[in-house]
Picture 1 (cartoon, rainbow, N blue to C red):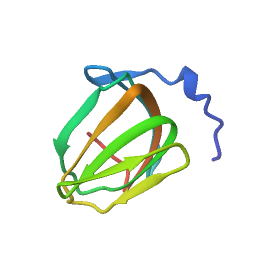
Picture 2 (picture 1 turned 90 degrees about the vertical axis):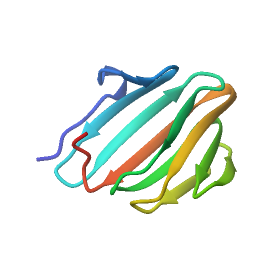
Picture 3 (picture 1 turned 30 degrees about the vertical axis):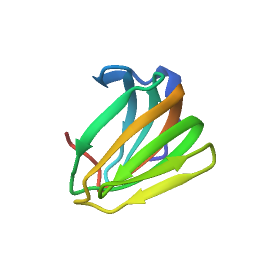
Picture 4 (picture 1 turned 90 degrees about the horizontal axis):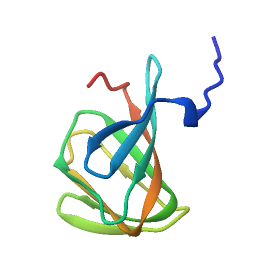
Length: 106
């Protein structure tokens, strides 16, 4: 059944200092709004899920396989499952949208 979600009403989870996630889970994908404080970062990690990260506001440095990618609003990065990656917000912070498939259970 379709459902309407107001993202501001989804409880925020702080998964790292200065990093808040608002995840919505479906049977086959996970969609998340991520709010990052200035210069906040997500350490290097990998997971089996395919991921797409899209910068809505601010700037983000996305590191994948050791290569830094500087992303601005309107840009995104596709990260296949199993690839080590990390992220760091720019000096003004950022808001990114992320989609994962299959759905995350962690």
